[in-house]
Amino acid sequence: MNSRPVREALPGPSGTEALFAQGRLILGDCLEVLSRLDHARFDLAYLDPPFNTGRSFGARQGEGERARGEAAYADNWGGLDGFLSMLEPRLAKLAPLMTAQGSIWIHLDHRGVHDAKLLADRLLGRDAFMGEVIWIPGNGSRRRKAPSVTHQTLLIYATTGAMHWHADDPILREPYADTSLRMHFAETDADGRHFRERTIAGKTYRYYADVGRQLGSVWSDCPAMRANTPLISEATGYPTQKPEKLLERILRAASNPDSFVLDPMCGSGTTAAVAARLGRQFVAIDQSELAFETAKKRLMANSVSSLR
Ligand SMILES: C[S@@+](CC[C@H](N)C(=O)[O-])C[C@H]1O[C@@H](n2cnc3c(N)ncnc32)[C@H](O)[C@@H]1O
Image (cartoon, rainbow, N blue to C red; front, side, top):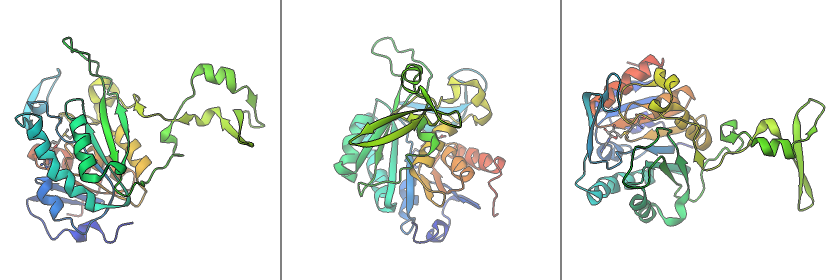
């Protein structure tokens, strides 16, 4: 639980801030902003940094993968070592801000995730590593000179070795395979629900077909913006925006309705928008003016009531 509300823990605005009924949106380098949050405690931090692509990103305007609008952020660190030097102090700032069962999710791709894992093990502790999620955005791959890359990785850490995890939330369920349904779920209860029973160590467990099985660690059902046109309604045009479905799963699985959620590099504000919709409190930070304006507009459009 949080010892005191986050907005009280902030000694006051520096840079630009937008105060919403359910949280704060702050323009600034998260290294500096996180230093001012020393009394805040979060049940979940989702860190989606640049991926060390060596490029600069602009807002997406119109059709086409590289359609460029206003500058969003630069992702050029002079190589992997430079990227890790940027990440290290910011990641280090997160650990003391987490509650006893708080978890830190670090979202990267093949370019930085392996070195970042070693970095996070060193900073947060090897025993703090709780697992990883392989996210398949569904954009496909045009890489031809080396094996294609169609996934990104989320590393999950909890410094005490324990985290909030709502394993029974339907968002962590997936349908059983057809063959499994045909072979194993032959019985039907009085309500017409198909089930199977298994006896393990003398105890009999009943599994219902309509509940589904526990979701695995490869998530392919949260398509990225460009992979699925129906998502256009949530697309802000901000580059590398993540789908709300992905954040909803993370938030519902790893935080509670009264939790404070932190996104130190929030981009278009996906985490904040989902947190507000789910009734969580949020602090969202980004150093890009375009990100700040995009997230602010999005939160206001989503009826996250503003106190100002
Ligand atoms: C991959 S994008 C985040 C996208 C976001 N998850 C979304 O759904 O829109 C990375 C963001 O990190 C921000 N960023 C990079 N360095 C930062 C820093 N030191 N402090 C705050 N934000 C930073 C960039 O401006 C960019 O918006």
